[in-house]
Length: 114
Image (cartoon, rainbow, N blue to C red; front, side, top):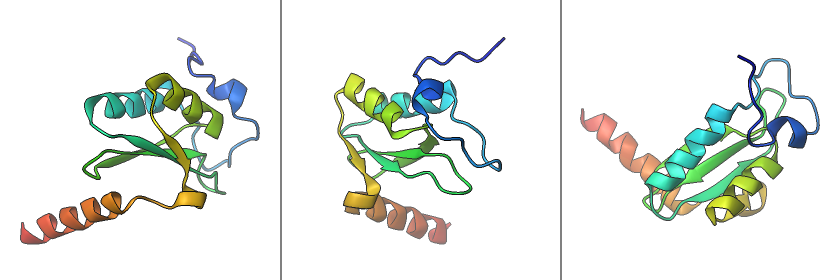
């Protein structure tokens, strides 16, 4: 079965990605949507394409829990955010939220106590 471009990833992606990376898929976008629908206060942070990685988005919940997925282009995550009525930010302009760093720190401490 051929992969369908449900979210416009192919149409909106623009430039080619690095040859070491894989392209964003519907499963990546659906994972971000599922995360956003199952948690409170989710915001999206777009990370730029790098030599080794395609454009990604980080979804950060109210408690700081987060997930990162490939999105293909910023336009894709902007469309998803608009459909879900959630904010989306450029991480190069805003940085990551403090609650995300606090969540990571709590996780590290929990791992150290195990």
